[in-house]
Length: 601
Image (cartoon, rainbow, N blue to C red):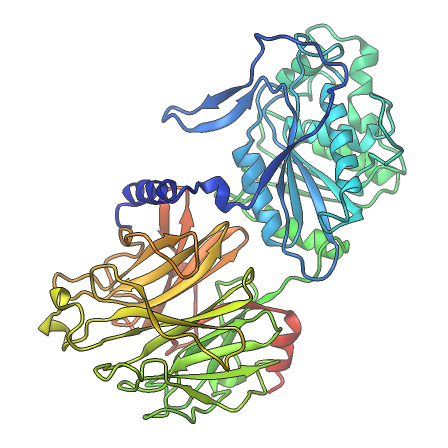
C-alpha cells in the first residue's frame, strides 16, 4: 500500500485540526460508576496510570481508582437493543482497554448490540478494604446501571449480558455465579444477574495447576485460604440459575489452560444450563479480534449464537447497485451476506431501464435509504448533460416515475454532470446530492490537455423532499481534478472518499477528506488509500466494525477493495468477488426480506 504509516499520521493531524479525535468518531461517552465507591480507602499517592508499548502507544490502564462505563449505543431500529458489559483482561493487574474493550465494543455495536466497556477497579489492598470483592462490586453495579437506564438507552432489560477476556473472563464468570452476593449496599433491588455471558479465553478457576497464577495472586493474595480459593473457582459455583454461556478458548493457550473453559462448560452442562463452546487448535492467549489462526472467526460464531438465542435480530444483508457496459440497459443488483462474496440477482439482468436524459443511460447508480423509509436513487444519464436522473422505491423493485434533475442548467459552460451521490443528514432531515462537473474556464490552474479538457470539481444541492432544491454550490475544490466523491457519517463527522483524476503526473487513485459538517468545509485530500492501479467509483460501508471501501479497477476490468486498520489501509481485493462486468456502484445495508423479494423477480 502507499505509505500507510504516513497516511495514519495525516489522518490524526487532520482530525485534531478540526477539533476531533478517534475517540470522538467512536460515538462513545464515559460515565462514573459510583457516587461513593463502597469499601474504598483514600490514598492520594495511588493514581491511575497508562501502560504503553515500545512505540509509546497506550495499550492498558493501571491503578484504576475511579471505575467507569464507556458507552457504545447501537443504532435504534425501532426495537429495544440487547446490551453487553465488556470486562477487558490483564491479569487483574492492568486493563487491556483497547484490544479487549473499545475494539470489541465497536464490533458489538456494528451487529446491533449496545456495548459498555467496564473500567473496573483492579484488586489492591491500598485502596480497598477487601480487594477480593472490589471488581465484583463494580460488575454488579454496572449491570444495575444498565437496567436502571434501559429506557433512556433503548435497552431491553431482559437482554443484558456480560463479556470477559482472560482475567476479565474471571470477573464475568464471577458475576454470573455470584450475582446474588451482597458485596455492597445497593440503593434499590435491581437485579445484578446477567441474562447471558460470553467468556473469551477466560480465567475460571483459582485452583493450582489450572489457574492463571498472576490473576489468582492479584485477586486473592499470596497465601489465600482454601475456602477463598474454592469460593472464586467459579466452575464450582455453577447452578441451574447461572446464565447461558458462550465460551471461546485456544487449545495451545499456555497462559490460561483450556481446562478453565472446559470445566466451566461441563458444570453448565451438568446443571442443564444452555452453553456453547468453541475450542480452537491454535491462537495462544489474548488473540482478541481478527488475528490469524484457527481462532480468527470466533466473532462470527458468537454473532450466530446471539441471533440463535434471540439477543439480536437477524442481521441485515448487503445490496450492491451497479451498471454494466455503458449503462444503456439500466440498474443491476447483487447481494452478499458478508460483504465479500457478491452474487448477481435476476441472473444479472436489469431491474430498471433508463428513461431520462440526453443519452438515456443509467451509469454510476447511487442508492440510499432515507429518513422517510424510501430508497432514493440518483445516476448519470449522459456523458454531456447538465443534470442527473432520480427515482425512489419502497422495495427496490417498484420505482417512481424517473425524473431529470437539471442541477447544472444554470451554468451555460457545463460540460458534464457525472457520478451523483446522496448522503442523508439525520439531524437536519436533509438530503445532500453531489456530483462532479467540468465548467469550461473554471480553475484554469489545473487545466490539462491530457484530460481532454475535463477539469472536474464537486458541486452539491440539498433538499428535504426531492421536490424543492437549494441553489447549486461548490462543495469541494482540492486543487486538482476531482471526481467520484462519496460521503459517509463516521462518528461526529463526515468522511469523503474521492478520486484524484489527475493524469499528469498520473494519480487516478482514491483519497480521503474530513469535515465536521456534511456540507463542509472538507480538509485537504489525504495520501492515496489505493495502490498502483487506476481506481474510481468508491463506495464505503462498515462491516463488523471495520470500514471497507469498494472501487472499480476500471483499467483492469474488475472490482477491488481496501479495509481500514490501525496502520492505514489494507488491500483486500483478492478476498472479494463480484459479478463479471460490474461497474461503478454503491453498497447499502438492507433488511433480509428485501433480498428475498428481489430474488423472486
